[in-house]
Length: 124
Image 1: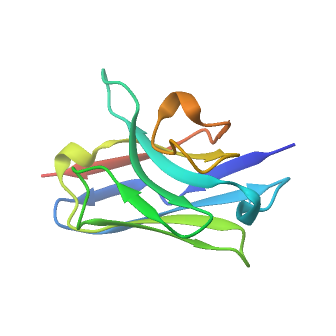
Image 2: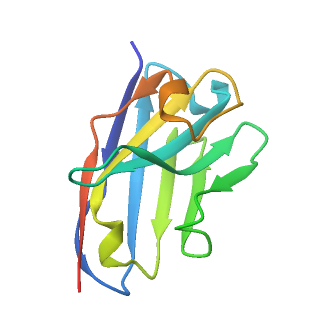
Image 3: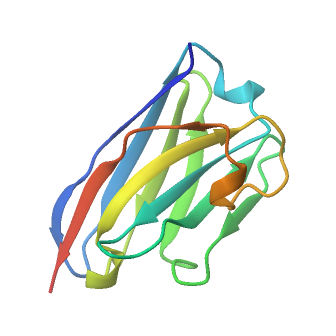
């Protein structure tokens, strides 16, 4: 059974940094076509933030380009999201997700597996 478990959420002031982790069990992250980070703010739809495919091609939402970095450690079977220069509008529940194929990885509807999320709160 595939499980994705996020950690690293919390509260930080604007301008600070935070690193989220997503550890997979029941599968190897290297076997997925791609993995991604998504977020959902209160009253808003879930949106894609960053993705990383099996060929290490990274894609970012315009709102986080230059501030967030997605990476993975296959030895630890873990996906990361380094969040720098955070803003209050980054406040959301952040979800890790995985997809069997490598296309359309920032599309919510296209992901095959989801974690339960971790809350990130950015104060001004």
